[in-house]
Length: 176
Image (tube, rainbow, N blue to C red; front, side):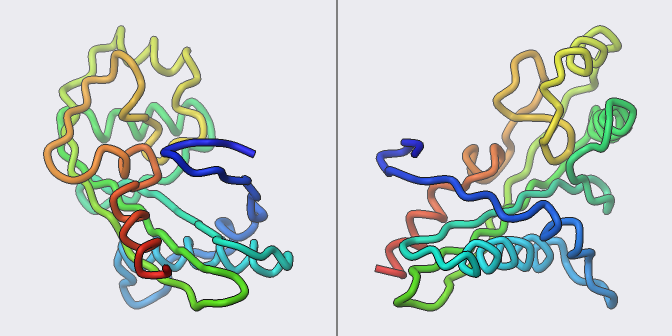
């Protein structure tokens, strides 16, 4: 049981295979459609366990100059992503699926934020990679991480850390 934003929650992680088995669809699926589909797939995986109550599932990805940035595989991949972001603006999109089980149908939406990263010095890049803070984060960086020169240009700061609270509240109101 975890507690945050005034809600009591129980975390049930869907199988990692949900994310790995869901590549972007051919024909130019947008990043927004992709993260929404991933969030729905995660919710469906949790619902399939027979759980009842409010299910909330999210998936977050970054995008810089048309390149999608998921979670880095290793430090070399994290370095590649951070260098791609250095000195540029990028988007962060989070798909959210809220499903009141067994009573309702899923509600879905996508939040988008725009960030800018100042150019990274070699010292900051090396420190960040050595810190391991990049692990498990889309785009290999966290808005909340110290020393990263990230500025929120537009959108929700909570979206950038992977749970857009404003959008979640809106979807929860729709569900009732």
